[in-house]
Each structure stands twice: as C-alpha cells, then as structure tokens.
Image (cartoon, rainbow, N blue to C red; front, side, top):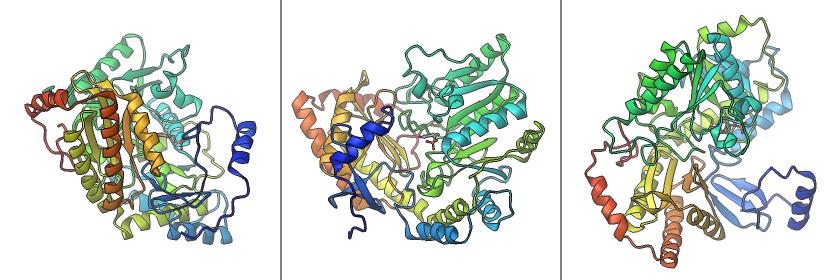
Length: 476
Ligand SMILES: Cc1ncc(COP(=O)(O)O)c(C=O)c1O
C-alpha cells in the first residue's frame, strides 16, 4: 500500500513525548515495544515502516478502517456545515429514522451523544428519572465506561481498586458464563438459574429498603471474557426487574451493528420475545468517528422531560456525525457485512474448534458471528486459567504482524472482534499462527492432550443445542 503519511517524529521521540505529556494511566498495547501505526485500510494497519498488521481486534473500524464512503461522507458534510442539534437538520432525523428501522418498533426515540460512556451515563439518568428508583444491578466483570457513574457499576474496573468501597446502590449479579461461571453447561437450566440470582438480589435489595431502577448488561459480555448468555436469560431477568419497577438496559457498545451475524443487534439472539427498554450504542456506530446513541421507548423519553431540565449536548447528533453514521449503515447493507460476519465467523469458529481438538491449552471456543472467544486453560478439568500463555500467544502473534488481545477476569480469553470485512483467508492466517504458537508453548511446558481427552468424554455426555455459528456452544 502506498503511504500518504510522512512520519514527523522518530519513533523514540514519539515515545519520549508520550511519557512526558500523556497521563501514565493511559496504557499502550505492547508497552515494552509499542507499535506506531500511521495508516490503516480495511482490516489492515500499517506502521511507520510500511509493515502491515492484520487487525483482529478493532471493532470500532466496523466497516473497515478508513472506508472511502465513510470518509467521503464526513469530509463532504464538513465542507458545508457542522453545528449543534438546536437547529433543524435533515441528517439528524434521517439517521434516527434509519437507525430505528433496525430496531423493534417500541425502541423509537434517540438521544445522540459522543462516546459509549456518555451513552451509558445518560441511560442511567433516564432509568432513574423514569422509575424514581436508585438501585442498579450490573454483572460481574462488566465494563460500561470510564465516567464516575459507570466505574461504580463496572466490576471490571472497581475490582482493580483495592480499597474501593462498592457503592451501596449497586448490586453485582453473577456473569451468565456457562463455561466458568456458577452454573455451567451441565446444569439443566442455566438461564433460569442465573436469572434467579437476579431475582434474589432484588429481594435482598428490597429487604434493605432499596428500589431497583435498572438492570444493565452487555448483550454478550466482551471485556468480561466473550461470554454468551444462555438463551432465555434476559427474558427472565427482564420479568423480575420489571416486576420490581425497574427497566432493562442493553449495552450494545461493542456488540451491535450486525457483528453477531444472525441479527443486527446482539440482544436479538435471545429471541423476539426480549426487547430492552434502553439500548446504548457506541464504538462501531461512526467507524472511528466519536459518536454514540441511546435509543429508548416513548414512555421513558417522556418521563425524562418531567425533570424540567433540557437535554443539550454540544456535539451529539451534529450533521457531520450523522452523515458518517448514515454512511456506516449504508456500507453495512451494501457490502452485506452482517452476512459476512455470519459466514466468516462460522468459518473462524470451525477452525478454532479444530484447534481445541488438537491443543490441550484450548478450553473453550464460543462466539456469534465475528465476536469470538478462545479461552486458554492449563487444565481442562480444573479450568486453571492459562494467563501467561495467553499473553505469550498475543506477543508472538504480534511478531507475526497479527493483532489480537486477551481479556476476561483472568486475561486468558483470546478475543476476536475484527473489522467486519475480515475474510476466510484472514481467519486461516491467524489460526495457522495460533496453531504454531500453541504447539511451541505446549512443548515448552510439557502439556499433552491426555488430560483434555478425559474432558472431551465428559462433555460429550452433555446435551447442547447448536449455536448461531453452527457449533455446540449455545445453551437454551
Ligand atoms: C461494553 C462497553 N460499554 C461502554 C464502553 C465505553 O465506551 P467509550 O470508551 O466510548 O466511552 C465500552 C468501552 O470499551 C465498552 O466496552
């Protein structure tokens, strides 16, 4: 690829300036040897020397890095007008209309904001205002954003603060993880068991005089370890929460916009009988342009006006953001990226399943579309997290110019969430490399398949329905 970019600074100078002027808690990938990316296209990123990296992690560059239609839409609108949403503008209403067409009818009112954090913070305000209640139920290992209100409901973050006092209006429910969680694949009805945990939390909150405003969860947990909740879980949770006068917020900041392949929204994987009261969106919505959105029902939106306070957001819903958002939706449709996510996601999970047959380090493969997790364990019976090994895979892949990350509470889940133009050839390349790296690691630590086979026999006794990617990883 021809580079249009002339590096202005030597890499070392960039590192020195960053150390001097950027807050030290702003972490960088591969801190001992960071990558300086200067250009990107589709599913590839390029460093200052023109070296190409395959991007398997960037779910923000949803339709591909620097997609020409998106870039053009933004640039053209910037030449004409950019202003706030207090003036009438067609882009705002046309975008809202087009976005609404992807959602169930009752989710019809939009608020435009600028980041996933802003979207979730506003969702909490809507819930508090609509219900008149205060308590929030969140999931173990959840991450919902970096602002104060969201650190309070993000165990992924507040557990990192050793002396953090958990806010008393926040209640943490078990993550509906059927691989490592409290109720696993061999449980007869994990959906009900996990939903009953929420019911118990509501009970206990009531006993202490609390009142539930909302249950918030990602439709599929991402930072929490690529967790796929059992089908029926959200329906039952919604019933318990609504009975208590609360509402349900689905955080689709990572998983929305067709990534899961079978549906446009990940909450739809649960079935048509589940519709959240609020959906929050971010990352992929602007393909890298900072925009985000909260969509809710007419009733919730009307209640928000009763506070008597106007809602104003300087940048949210500006004509440039909405032009970009429209272009992103157009490209998803025109290039059938949702279909691609389904096809390539199925291909990728097939390849990864074969790795599981071959490598004892692979404990679980789970995914929907191009949202896939590969959980590494040192022992398939004890589920001992292979944290260091996962880090080694990530670092060795980087040497092969492939970008992948590891997450989850034990940082042992390899996360695939590439741009949606990812191809089967890309999947072949990354899995081939993972295969070599796992072979090397297993030889070095003397891990044999022997232990793993015992577990295969155990798990073959389980009755598991096929998932959306056509694998035995879904539970209903
Ligand atoms: C599920 C989820 N919600 C919300 C956020 C916050 O979004 P932002 O970083 O755009 O504020 C993130 C960010 O990683 C996220 O993963």
